[in-house]
Length: 449
Image (cartoon, rainbow, N blue to C red; front, side, top):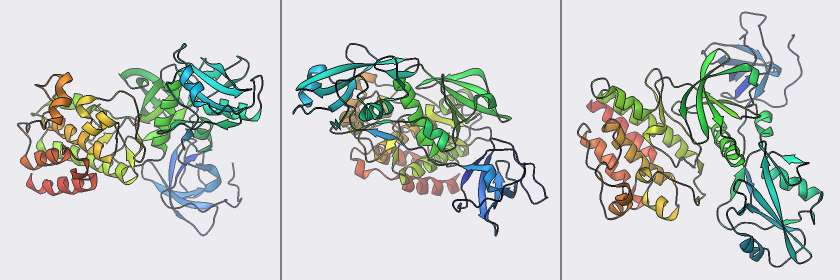
């Protein structure tokens, strides 16, 4: 196929990521051949606006025709201001006063767990429509099906289509808003992967949303997350992936793409040495040196400083969510709970031993609550994978911490690292260091090894 000389719509900046739409064999020694589906990174523009200097994942560089590749962009979450979560039928009716025709909200069904209820005002009454989850889709009448609640609401905002009224005005929820993700946006943004391009192999773990499997994609080994079969998990699953489309750092596990359909799959880079807890416990002090431990700490802090700069909160930072590569690089994974730092999150289950007091008591999650968790992670690291608060019953941890109890320095932990732990565990979040500061502190420690 000859390269089309059609002028590109926009100029691409160095570092722009692209996915190959077609195979390109190259016609000169200056060209960079690639196969369909390969990741290509723009190096710089050329005098000809149809051609760019680029490099592949192997680090090889050359010229590419711009119309053979598709620019990758971040997938954005959509807010659902009308979704009120777990409220009762009576509470919904109380909220929908004054009774204006077409005023509506959506809540979780109290009678049918996993389903939803659309509440619509009409002629001074509130009609309650059960939204059924069936075959990975949502429906009211089992005739028209929707991928998510946003699509369903958009449909009935346009046409009543059997409801008592068209959805005219949403009743906004006070406080924290919920999100939905449109799978079509993964296609438009260049993150959708064709199922025929990868194979699924053996089970290697279990995650928040389902099984984690090993597999092969475009000739490389990958990790594949396979979704559990329910709509809420599907939205959380895609929300995790959407966060990952906006992030790129050497110490964050990279998203390769999403395979849409049933089941849903997320393809990630493969980390051959598994999670940090298992890595520490299986190898121990005889294999893992102080240099290894400090390097892991620096890797993790660097990734968290990057998230901090982007005002993203991880909310589940722990050694179990750190993966180790073949060449002993630590990378932060599992963004299923990540949210913008400006949003306080309500509800949900959180790992008590790793979560800061203000996050547990008031659901106040921030980059500083991540710093608290990082301090716990450092303790895990230098105790070679021990469970935190080893002599404190789980039910008593929060009370002990709020009274001022802090874990002692692990036997093999240098005093300067323990000082970072103690700073991270300040009761006042304002007094905790930033990850940027922690990175500098840890880097300065390298000379003492």
